[in-house]
Length: 201
Image (cartoon, rainbow, N blue to C red):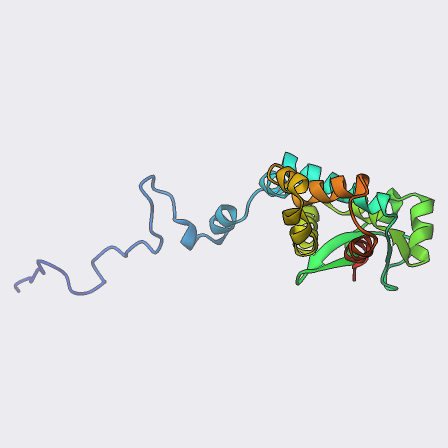
């Protein structure tokens, strides 16, 4: 009997199976074939996430200016009834709306009795809410207030040479703080400022 030998075997019987996983130049499976590896690549570490959520020095100053305005104007905010007295609610932003309530909540054990009492009455100073807001939410809170401040005060700043010069090197929060501290804001605009600061859902 003669034995036939294929020069290039057309079947899979005598050919080694192909590797299912592609390997990179170092011989490791690619992330696309390994869900765990893919998750590690796509998901930032906790340290990286915390770093991304941290405010820059300029943003920290803006947040401090915002807290100063809230305290200076003695702004109070209504808390949703769903927030219980044992929980201190910070602020968060949902669909462009600043929200006070459980979305930004912290465990009540870290909160003093005075704060819990304020929340139980559904009225909390904005300054307290800003203080309780988690660091990861503060940039969005600044962004939401920034848009409202720009809309209200841009024209006033442009018409005043002193404020215009100040605004060239400072943020809108710093300029509004300067205006309020030096009583450069008229009563009607102060009322509108109070409305912006207290407009928390």
